[in-house]
Image (tube, rainbow, N blue to C red; front, side, top):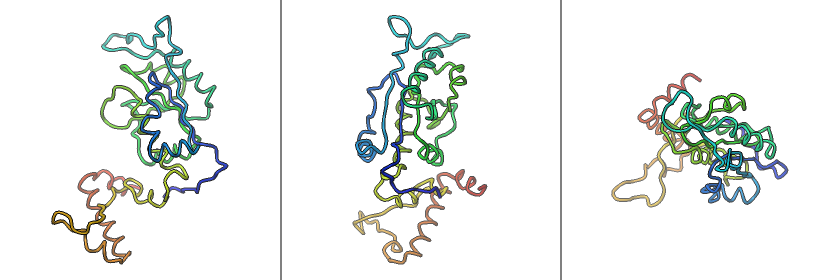
Length: 243
């Protein structure tokens, strides 16, 4: 189980730096609820950088036709490279640079923990068909995917990654203990949850959860987690066995 330190008022705020063609999309939903409260409290900071400021010509072009032909347009290495260099000079070169791509490493809870425990992240939200491979290599970008589907751009993916990380920061969630019983934290999906009323539309809360016997409750929760994981994500059980 990852170590969850208590909030330290002297700790530097976790930094999020976003390179995008649509900076007005941020903070978006991250400005609400727990993430928004944490932003207002200075537990994390947000900076956005307009890639088009480094575009070429009177129209500030950021893309061009793909070498070798094909449909769509590709973001230029020279434009994106200049945007990254500018953002690093302002926000720090210590932030890992992440580019969202279907070819990337899947975003997992363990990766969210890894990033949340660092100084922050610099996220490149691409558009069009993708990004010139040369700038990915030259600037040491880490490619990450949030799922096996295609989005119009990386901005929504950036929000997903940020939300996954921010909620893990010390002081963001009221009770840190609540984070330890969620799906993926133990390698299993979370057990079923219930609350009042005791009876609803002919359905009852399992009696064991009302027994007050914490040992029996814990055993039921583990069994239910195993059942749900086996039915819905057997791959997680196989990965758990290999640990």
